[in-house]
Length: 315
Image (tube, rainbow, N blue to C red):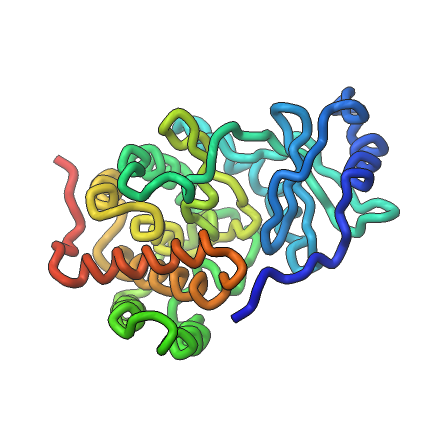
């Protein structure tokens, strides 16, 4: 099972500082003096904290280079409606260009104070349900015709059937058979559901509790829009199982309300299963995300064992 891909460029404090000074000094006058420290490294990008309120986001491999460009192009358009709901997004404050020692676009973005939603126990996340639902209501609107295209996010489930079947096969024998069967059942139910037949809407494309920033027990921000695209909103609605327990999920689904039908929820369950399986197959070196995958399948299993799957209605 694969670990995190190796970085293709060695990103150092000296490299980041040099690009800040050469490109961003006009926008960030203190670019040469502000404290700078590496804050996080994911599969695609590194994040370096700059001072107390900014961060530098840089791709660490060529496959991820377009993701930062997508954020630079799309977030100035999508950010304000989402932020009007009370949740912030990392709209770039500066769009950096490739340099002599660094080959890709990079950004300076706001730094959001708080912790990852992933670090908050699932049972304590219920208060996030309504705010996240409102943010998705602002995001899931008709997309521009020239939206970024993502070949695996928000697409019809049938387009990913072969890849998901292969991952399910890989999991057999490594986790309890019941959980693999639950994932397979949720995926099959989604494949059988009516597909999305309306115009594509904007979707985040990587919405899970690791990309929620939480402070003072509320969701402060949704981050990492690199996979932003347009298509079936069920892809984002999988957060109902990725982030919440049964109580929080009921609140979330009630807050989404009549704008989502039963078939879309079935597809969302399928995407939750597919994402959980992906995490379990590809997180050997990241126990937090392996646990997220396991917990998500356990939520699906508990629901299937007897909980009401009907979509709650608002009154």
